[in-house]
Image (cartoon, rainbow, N blue to C red; front, side, top):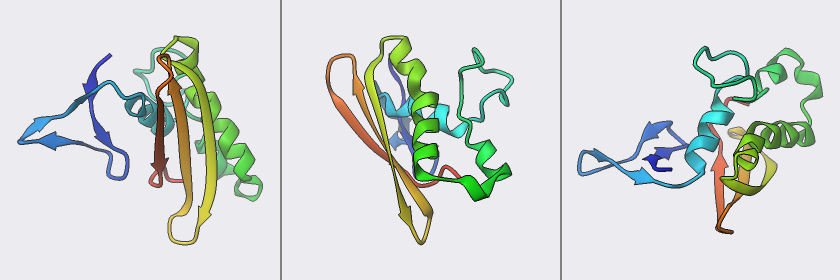
Amino acid sequence: MQSWNIDPSTGDYVNNNGQPDQTNSLNVPAYFRLKISRLQWMYAPDSKYGSDYYTLKKRPAINGNQRIENMTVKALQPLVDDGRASSIQADVTENDREGIVLTTQITDATGEVEVQAFDSLGL
């Protein structure tokens, strides 16, 4: 399924000569599922859409990297459930400047692996 490509560092669409780039990458739906808070967006297709990152701000003392990785996999699990991806992996590394960097590795249904680093998710 084609969509407009997004630069995850800015959240803006990627343009080429004034036209939005088209892509089949699963990084685009992954970006939206991670940026949108679960049950907070009125246009969400179901209760599985979005992430639970907003709960981290309520209880900052228990922000473990493993917890963030689990939240990421849970937010992206619908991509596996609907057959677009075969597996999802997440890795959190701490960075003094941005706080943390979340790296996702999504294996699509054809076996192609897409790796994306997210450093502007607000975590």
